[in-house]
Image 1 (cartoon, helix red, strand yellow):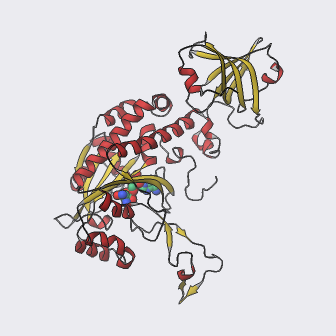
Image 2 (cartoon, helix red, strand yellow):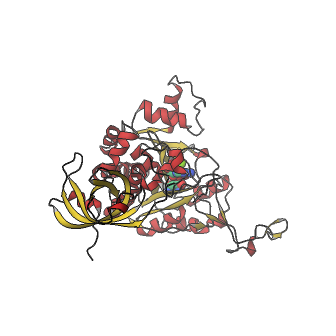
Image 3 (cartoon, rainbow, N blue to C red):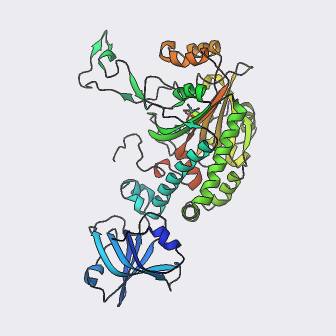
Length: 461
Ligand code: 4AD
Ligand code: MG
């Protein structure tokens, strides 16, 4: 049996071919007196293949009733299309109906709201927009690995179940096999001795701490995996489960860290523009018309850097009536982030050297003893895309910071070991993969750039 050819390849052929097979799902069907026209899509690209079925075909009665959403295999001849909009069409000799579609198939009409499509996340990939998101996500995952592998980084699989809290923020999901209806107790507290690991276990919020240990042996490493946070914030930029890319580089400082982050974001943007042009064109047309110009500027490496202290000064003298007054020592609010990267600079902005009190224990203390060598990359639309830092490589300073934040050294003995044996300056960052997809598509809700979003009170699929 001849194999089916992907529609992407059929549409890119240069010569007619009188014997091909295509498979896909019917997007629309319209009938004239003498023909049925089926638009079929197989997910290989955005474009549909037009199938022309002559009324004289055997089984035409059935063909005439093939509904939207059905799956078909079509045998026939690929010929130049007289119609506008496509170079090729498939003149069917046989149309096999592989799977029908009930009349209540929800994707009958052309456009649906994103809110509605979220309720049918198992079907939305069959629309142009969500197909484009899915292809972009896949190609970009490949490009992330390619970016790091070409630079000699080693890919490390950090654990998903963990015994330590990387960010120290306590926003973690517990992992347990204890019977929650009969939790064993000893001295009034949960007796974790009886749990699977004999101690509390959680889903990771970041691979960083484990990754650092590999960095201090392999030099340049990265991880790319699912990350979990139980922060109960129902925003358009947060999910309970998201994917994070984290590089970690030995013998590197904060400036090198920002250089790497900038190269990564601009190269991945250039990759998307070149590799995913057909899919990006949809976002430019239907989601955000300003997208192409913005992405071109990012691909060209148009970034800014400003210290946290200077950023606070700029915010204070902006004359804006912010809901939260910008104040040294406080975290930046969304409205502040937007001002910096959409109004003050209108490009991605690194904010570096943050107050120590509002940042994690592992960030390197600066000589002023008030700020740490940390950076956030803020981007138009999706806000904080990257959080990173140079790491505290001095054992004594690290222990002081851990004590100040109430962390138990015994839980981090292996982390402290790396500062005892061959400690060197090193730095890294975490990039939220969905935030990057928001930047590249202009899509405003993070739930629409991941196949099955997990958010508070929402675990449908
Ligand atoms: O800034 P964060 O918390 O940094 C870390 O976890 C570091 N340990 C990373 C490192 O240095 N290796 O998170 C990094 C990025 C954020 O900038 C954001 O893009 C994304 O992860 N992120 C989220 N994305 C979706 N939903 C959430 N709830 C997110 N929380 C963080
Ligand atoms: Mg952060």
